[in-house]
Image (cartoon, rainbow, N blue to C red; front, top):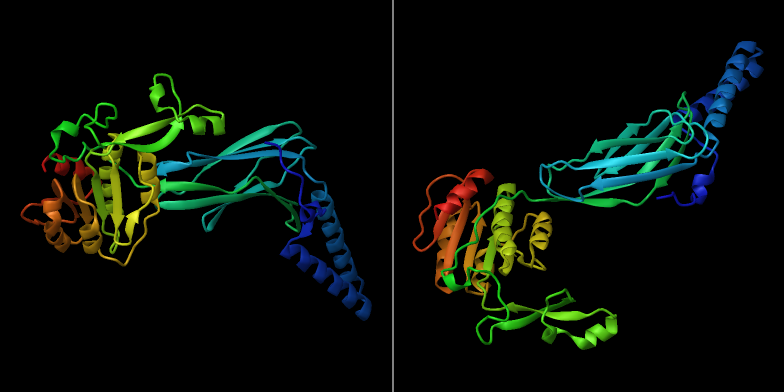
Length: 371
């Protein structure tokens, strides 16, 4: 993309750095001292400082003509996986040197020194982005700084807009949580669902093969695009994942994400609940990961949210507190199956609840298969 016109402050020829202001102030003091005391040496030094400052201003005065593009790839990444920023700079004007890119990454600033840019030459540099902490990491704005060799003056200009890198939980592949209702394990159905269980879910664009009886003509006329009703089998077993966030651990978030993702990818409804209440809009695999990427430590326990959760299907509690496994046993009659993923070590036995202790995410598939 071509760069936008410079803002008014960016049209300034150049700005002095702290060292430049110091050089200017020192030169003026030397001039005053030389004339006041009648010594030529301070005047010579002051003249040299001012000439150097003038040369620095002349170095940075021309406004560079640059085409700059910075991309972050990927924009969503599991915690610990690689994400990079790729910076492409093309020089459309005179030859440039002393160019430096400054990109703000979260609360830190990353600086890249660009090699000399002859006219018409493009340079590409990349630098890694931190992904060790789950959550949103703002990247930008990107600043290009051109400074003189003495560091007395510089020209700063921003390019593009900030973007957000979303660091998601890590996950492992798991089978769908069993619900005790084998006739639903084929996945979601619509036309063949039992009578009274097919309900309207949303509108979407028509694709070849859709039943024309499901076309929503009013919406199609309003949007100019053929829209159809998407129906779901409301009788499908729901997987309710309850995440204890009072002593939030990344392993707990990873485990909850793995369980919810397994159900969502299989097309089954998923409900995410924390001590602060239900997590909204976690209806598909991408939404599950996006929402869990933003979960933070909470103050509420999971006993009350679990008690209020709608019954049916599987209940999976993820907690570092072994006492919660005992409390969740009180609602086991409302669910077809209750599983507690205990993020810790040691044996925990609760009648009617499958307790799976794990010390690492890699241990979850093995424990899950032995439930």
